[in-house]
Image (cartoon, rainbow, N blue to C red):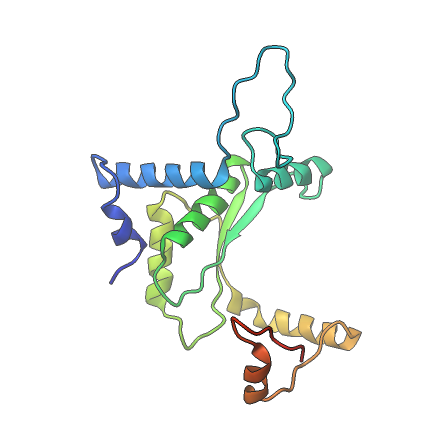
Length: 193
């Protein structure tokens, strides 16, 4: 059984497991959420945007959130979510996403929900749900809420029917073989259905 917690326990030269976790989560947050510190400016110079158009020390995600907060789009509340599929153990990419999503919520004094994308019951297991929740907590975060996409299937189904009736969506009646042929490959683009 190899999953996030056991994979990360051995990283770094921390004095304890707790120090290791805090250090890892802090490094992940700072590398994922923050841009490198800008060079010091001479006194009297105004802070301007860097070559990417971002304010110094900010990244594009923070800039978007700042703009949304400024415009009132979010009613002053930042809400993020981490949506893993409970069909396996987490890996380092998941850890980066956890630190990004929970870190942004923390930075903006908002909320981050854990929403399991449990849309394929054949590959999902409660063992993975428990493992994912343990890994989120191991990294030092606590979800504001825990949700399951499957709890909303009836609502999603009704929305789909509405979109179809409005002409904004359709049901693809292609056979499995036709779908496979139209899907395309790495070397050949797919076809519209």
